[in-house]
Amino acid sequence: MATNKPETIGARAIRFVQRQVLMLIEGMQMPTKPAVFGQQERRKERERYRGTKQERGYGGEWERISQIVRKAQPVCMICHDAASEDVDHIVPFNGLSDPLRTARSNLRAVCRECHNRKTRGQG
Image (tube, rainbow, N blue to C red):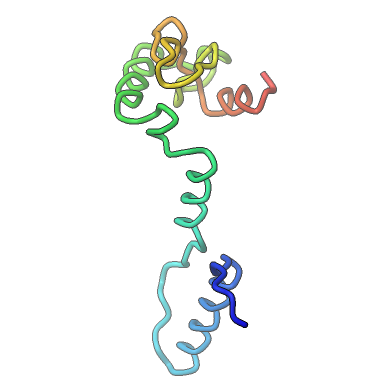
């Protein structure tokens, strides 16, 4: 009895390598750029788990706000040593209708390292 399970990324990678070997044997030219296995699948899986950036409140409106904050604060507001790349919510917001999501007083520009450290709960 056959089941219709979705193909795993590992199985897809094995098929890719098998095709590359056949191309070598048959004298066909191999691609010059290595394939990134499952990049789209990983993104879709992550979005299924977390929701899309729009669903989480980081769509076009957030991009505009983020750009304004980073322009006003070009240096990280935590370490004061690196260029700001991200915008951090000082107090986390609860849902898209929460005024803290876009309140300028709740936002600060930070470097990627400081933002990742805070997001992981280390800072």
